[in-house]
Amino acid sequence: MTTNGAPTALPTPSLSTRALHADHPDHTTHPNYPVAPALSLSTTFRSPHPHSSDAALLESAMRGEASLDMQDPSFHIYSRYSSSTNLRAEKVLSQIMGAHALTYSSGLSASYAALTFYAPRVVAIRRGYHGVHVGLDVYSRGREVKVIDLDDDYSAAMEGIDPTSTGKGGLLVWVETPLNPSGEARDLSKYVRLAQAVNAPVVVDSTFAPPPLQDPFTQGADMVMHSGTKYFGGHSDLLCGVLAVKDKKSWDGLWSDRTYLGSTLGSMESYLLLRSLRTLTVRVAKQSATATELAKWLHSLTLPDGPVEEEDEAWGKGKVVGRTTHSSLQPRTPEPGSKEDPSFDPSTQMPGGHAPTFAFRTTNPAYATWIPHLTEYFTPATSLGGVESLLEHRVKSDAKEDPRVVRVSVGLEDVGDLKADLRGAFGRVLQMEKEGKLK
Image 1 (cartoon, one colour):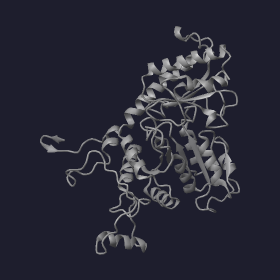
Image 2 (tube, helix red, strand yellow; image 1 turned 45 degrees about the vertical axis):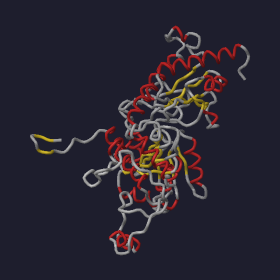
Image 3 (tube, rainbow, N blue to C red; image 1 turned 60 degrees about the horizontal axis):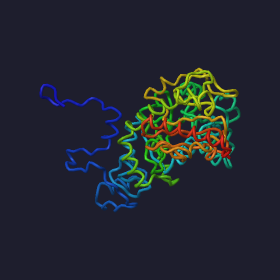
Image 4 (spheres, one colour; image 1 turned 120 degrees about the vertical axis):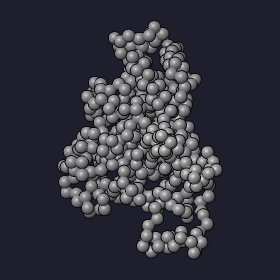
């Protein structure tokens, strides 16, 4: 870029541009680099020559006299420490998340790494992905860990606990937003304020709202976690977890933990992840827009006195769908017994759009069993975030879930086709019921 013939710096690139170019080599030193990144599958690498500067640096680091920057090492030793493909993926993730990002072998390994890093004695958490709760149970074995609700009194929960007695110790506030499986959002600013009042870190599971939908760091989060299997991967073909932190010292600590817990992301998965990050913004934007339209339509079918389209008369007015949950439907009146804030409006917290995954609750548990299997474009399957749309009878994965709930993961199909597919499934399930075949 030039001004009056003189070269000037380019403006700060947008998110989509960073996803495409953050890891590109410098063409002045690599004039013929491949446009598609190379895949390195090697687990081990030739050691530096004894008289080289890299060998001297390694020996100095082993003596504790110097440190290797493992976020940008000048050479590789073993793929559990670093590899070129993994580093490229992490470089892109760091750019699009605006923080120091680290990859893991799965979303659950990333969530467990967060627990290990903060070593909490008290964890404030409510609902959300059941796998995180099971991981917390595993972490708590042999430890005296107190689990409290997000809206409990944090100071009272810490009475009698010395936060310096077991390393970092203390309280950890774990906020999942939007929620799995409902797609509803929570007020991050509120929980950050509560946590900061007692000097507690906040981890945000933002899996349901990847960039560009939500940036928890702008609300004051200390760490952001993603199951990269979902939207970062985006093609239902890799397992991955991601943690991101604002300061390099925390990244170094996470890297050391990961190295010796052995939860490094494999090179093939890193390559697939890097491929997927290139299209993240366009995929998520379309998925979010389609999900918002679908959720609005499904919500209209739940209203007993609301207007419905003529073609929806047979299953509208609460005949099949009893309630639809999605961040775009907030604020709204909560259900009895709910602890969620009915007044929270997530539009400011999610400036890029609403969750591409949400849920609806049928009026009959048998409907929820059959509807996913009566569609053509939706696949009855678990997971979410891929380019293909999925329907999941959620109780099949989480035994504690309401058996009437169907989770919807919106892919890249045309929204009109997805509506037509659901209409067909609603009609067929009602016909099955009429014929006595709904068992």
